[in-house]
Image (cartoon, rainbow, N blue to C red; front, side, top):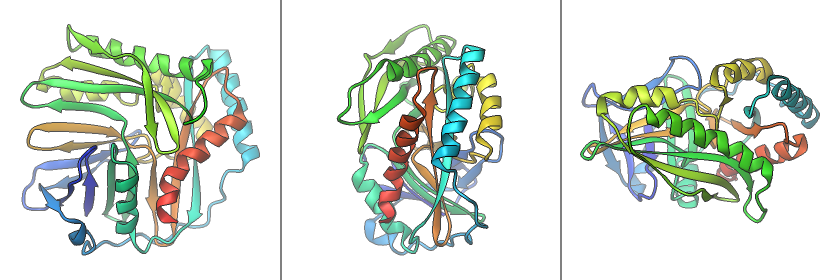
Amino acid sequence: MIIFKLPFEEKHYTIEENSQENKVSFYPFTGSSKINFKGNLTEISFDELSEIQYILPENPEYEKNETFEEYVKKIEKTIDFIKSNQLPKLVIARKKTIEASTSDIVDAFRKLCKKYPSAFVYFFAENGISWIGAFSELLGKFDKKTSEFETMSLAGTLPVNEQWSEKEIEEQKPVTDYIFKILQKYSPIIEQSETYDHISGNIKHLRTDFKAKISKEDLNNLISELHPTPAVCGFPKEICKKAIADLENFDREFYAGFSRIETENEIFCFVNLRCGKLFKNSIQLFAGGGITALSNPEKEWQETELKMQALESAFI
């Protein structure tokens, strides 16, 4: 079972299981254990949302949350690794389990749709796995009629009322460079916007947009090359993926993976951020930050707390 809303749309959709076509898929950060939803996209009203049937998995065994002190030590170790390997950026995440009333997921879904109109908002419960999320980072959007491909470089995070520093600017730059170089392999002409503020609730990011004409046959390869971008992994990719596995000590699962949604005219791929894994009376929240040699561990902790609030607030 899945329900979702596309960015800047008021319509809500589910999957009517009447065909074998994959219309919606969720891919993990690493590995190949994706979840597929086969069938046709069907519009569903707000009233019909309340009739959705789902079963949440039982609460997991108690798992101690990472403390502030433990997180600071992890980030200090990360900064040492960055300096010794001369990396421009390495993204390190944390997860936190909170007790929450998950008896009305549809209400939480509605709140997220209202609060984040520019986001891809979803909830699914499938084969004993259940996730919810709301975020607008576009890994890729392909127009089937025009062959135009769109993507974005989104990185750097601050509260809305704060000013950008060198740290955030240096964090976003390698993401932009990385995407541009990959797009050059697939298209001779690339449109790149100026960098601007992208507001998401109580925080903002630096954003640069890209457009290019590509062949539909190249779409899957292009997405595979883009994922994971430096915005959720770091750069160089393979070194950072190994470092993430060594430093984080948990499986990201679908956090920082991506979703793929195919409609009649377009194919969307969204990075899966501001998301959580749902249980009967709790949620595992995930959030990360781009660590550079200029990072302040305490400020990075505050950033992850702000990011987790985006989802946590829907269950209050």
